[in-house]
Image 1 (cartoon, rainbow, N blue to C red):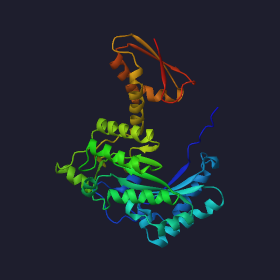
Image 2 (image 1 turned 30 degrees about the vertical axis):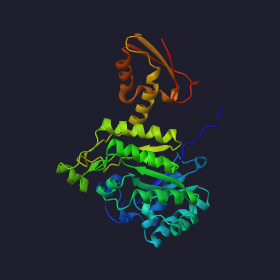
Image 3 (image 1 turned 90 degrees about the vertical axis):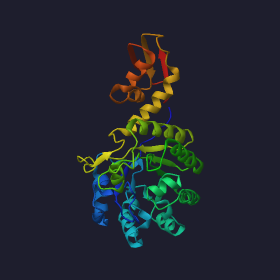
Image 4 (image 1 turned 135 degrees about the vertical axis):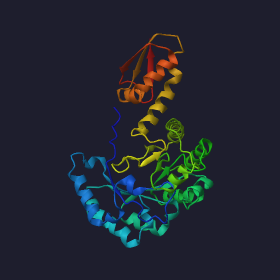
Length: 343
């Protein structure tokens, strides 16, 4: 039997907008994270880590990791950056946490900063690339270029860090073809992981004003699922795992009127994974009218993907085959992504 891989235990510490040189058109970090950036101090970091260690889910065997998300970590004042990392140091020395990950901008990575991160046990650096198209980046007021992302990924990999790339389809000026080109350019960089967050229109952002004026049209939910499914397949068949799709929700993000428009769904990642799975099994399904009854053998872990969100996957199979009865049989002998059809 192959050894079962444990899911990493990641403790997020959000530093919304801290270190960011300016505000991008889509950004509203305070609402996304439900945290006040002024309150992210060393004492708060220790409280978060203490609570995590006391949690019944805490498991040292899962190599727990502290993750600083939401701001531009490497653009923080040096004293602030050291202070946050020093707050984690005792937990690392005690063996409670295995490593640290941070998120930052592609144009905020250099050898001097990486020297500091390496000293404190940072292993993973995620870059808010968003796009590899310079016009999309300019319209989104990102303030960096695609070349900055390429340089940063290469530098991180040469220094032995794990490099992650965060991408955002549906930004101003983006199209399905442009986003797929972004995916191909990311594949050539060979980062260690990727996240995909379709752009949303959030209240109080410059993008909200563009949307109200009719100058910006966000992706629909079906279009976002389709683009992300295609991107996910290309990335993962190229050996780049997609570790998250869709924005993580918070109570303040879900306040009425906070999300004005865009492809928001509380189970967006599941919608994408189900779409990928269902497209993969399409060639194995009988043709329309060939049978009234289908028995599908599938790995027990993938039954939810087969069924789809609110059984829409089963409805899709009925529409494609015309079968009136679909039976699902758990089969532990089947590897992930495989099914067996029986009449």
